[in-house]
Image 1 (cartoon, protein in one colour):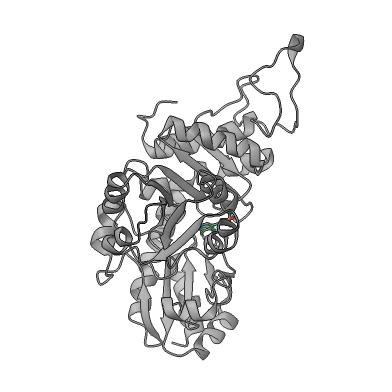
Image 2 (image 1 turned 90 degrees about the horizontal axis):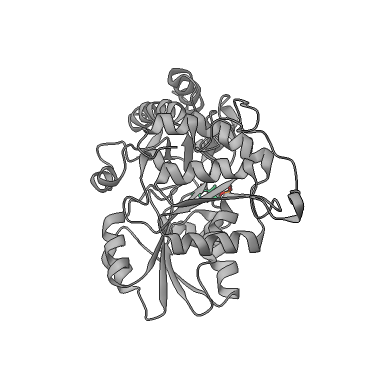
Length: 381
Ligand SMILES: *Cc1c(COP(=O)(O)O)cnc(C)c1O
């Protein structure tokens, strides 16, 4: 499929949009672990961990969407993070944001040190702080912007410039923005990572991770590690993911419109102390964010003046799923302290400003007026 197609078209047609064998309107779910060697000779596929047509569809899709040379699909976002971090080796040092996604925090503090890879967690909103943390053995910057749940913004161009000058690899977890809002590789990032469980899948019905790069050498290494580690995305989940990706643009636009409405109304609500959302005029990272992303996204968080209000909201809201996830067609409400960021020790959360009175909303595609009525009722209007 041509890379010059516009995003909405690419999303629908992806790399392959019909079964070459039958013309079926969808790529079939190839439920085969192994592939016959006709005449005893290997064909395009031999064993499903190494590759299969269902997985090829989503791997090509992420490469097309991010402008990469090749894509990789994993059994979860964390498997994708692990697959990308396999590019590092014992003795290396990696710098990551101090308000990292909880699961990645766990990976960086639990798994990497055992592999002899050291980690520094720093405030990445200031490029100078990142540059100061670089050591002779530093090999990579692991980036995430906007951060979650406080929506701190890091300047991707500035960090890529530092990384290039100092010979470091850049890896960006682009889950919150998706390729539609933040073109990671075009901004100079070496490896883009997505938890496709979130917006790309979009229906809260699967776990998946995607990785892509524009560098053929990195792609070859990622391919070897993906095959060696074996945490690949299963064929049926590839089908679900390919189906979700088709509607990403319409879903994301609708959800983002809803998030903007909720953010503005929450700012004006007497029970709310603070709202964190790059779509608000007063957001401190707004200018940097909009210099690298086409929209504010569909996730926001807000702090209540009163901790007891959190219990009330969680008990009273009817529409949102109350859960540690985001990016679905249904609105998802998260108490970060006890759910998405449970892996981060309480004193660290306190220090980062992730308070018990903080709630996160991933706006779905319901009518925003219904969402607001439900939320305002739970807040006690
Ligand atoms: C959910 C998430 C992940 C992990 O993805 P899983 O599919 O849950 O393994 C990584 N990064 C971010 C930003 C996420 O939101």
